[in-house]
Length: 251
Length: 266
Ligand SMILES: Nc1ncnc2c1ncn2[C@@H]1O[C@H](COP(=O)(O)OP(=O)(O)OP(=O)(O)O)[C@@H](O)[C@H]1O
Ligand SMILES: [Mg+2]
Image (tube, rainbow over all chains, first blue to last red; front, side, top):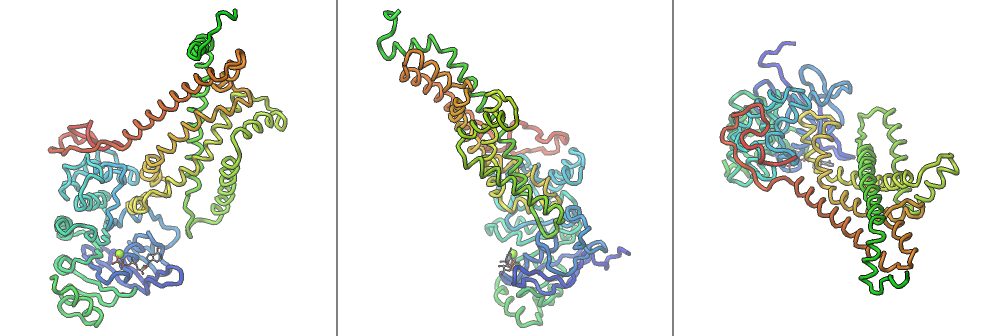
């Protein structure tokens, strides 16, 4: 297998997810290249979160394939925890471990999962906390932080295991407007540094300015997939046009 | 002799304390011992049962394990229902006399008492622990899994510390209940506080005065336990504030550089 820039780092093939009788994801198909940033937009309930959760197996897909490093990770023999250390996730509700300090949050996975020595794990954690501007807060507990601070720590925690892809599920939706900016600016930095990211977001300006590709989802299918210029400037599908019409005044 | 006997309530109380103070305190010691170790072992049993009862079974679990798991779950569920569903006083009788009659084991009353208190507490704690585990926010386990932890790692680093913190009040409650309820072990002649009191009261037929003293001793024990537990709960909650670290890289070897006494406690 060659690892040139054009080889997808992750491919989703014919992904289907049903909850009971309801088909929430219908034949989702896309791949993401190294260093790319994909924004996923779409109405509430269109299946964006479900798709992201399927990618790191918080939900078990009903059928389809997820190819990572040339292997279908849905094969039963695959080591799921190991895969998850390569595909990180940032949640809308932060989900910082409430029984740990900021620093411990960022060290726990490197130490318990990757078995890194504490000293090394600490240095890595500090490096990322520095990057998100939270190094001063290492002794704080999550419940003592603002939403924006929590989300920045959550990003540092995800980065501390050095994932190859980072998934974001509406990372700013639970934040007060004045805190959205601080989180988005951290994410733009990561994009500029070449981190591969898949971002579910309602921040259209961010999706337009930071990502190389935008996917519009509706009712469990990918309706349109293209560059931000195509999707925002010249949407082909009627659904996309209608959806974006509601947001254009925000951009 | 009879001329020396006290005539007032307080006189009797003093008399009883003089005559039986040591015996009553020894009884209180046995009570505390049974309650403390019974609660401790009960918590360990409860923790174990609660943890096993919350092992997730998914589509990916292999069928051999699923079958084994079903059997174990049945046994644990039966254990919880039986020991919660029968009075401890009856369990004491069954264990003490039954061990002799059925298994020919000559158990001392004290050992039988420990066993009954521990196993009984274990049944209650199992439910408490299970509840504590399932009440931890699902986002916490998802976040742990999303950074690569398996079920066991998630349990001991994230879920159990939070569950334990949440069930501390119930653990304390169990301890206080045990301090009081070990009194039922008098039916198998464990020389705990109630048993000693009953014996002492019988000598002069001063039931009210003796049990008044007993009452005070029980209350002192439960009240002290309750205060200590409050303190522990308070400590577990961690400090109310934190300090900024101005030079975070100052001591890259320590977890909490500069101000090791500040910040959240696990
Ligand atoms: N565990 C579940 N069981 C049953 N149905 C579910 C479950 N999770 C999600 N769904 C359903 O799947 C659909 C898609 O949900 P999903 O959360 O993926 O939407 P979304 O695009 O992320 O929406 P939002 O923008 O509001 O976050 C919804 O109709 C939801 O009710
Ligand atoms: Mg969602």
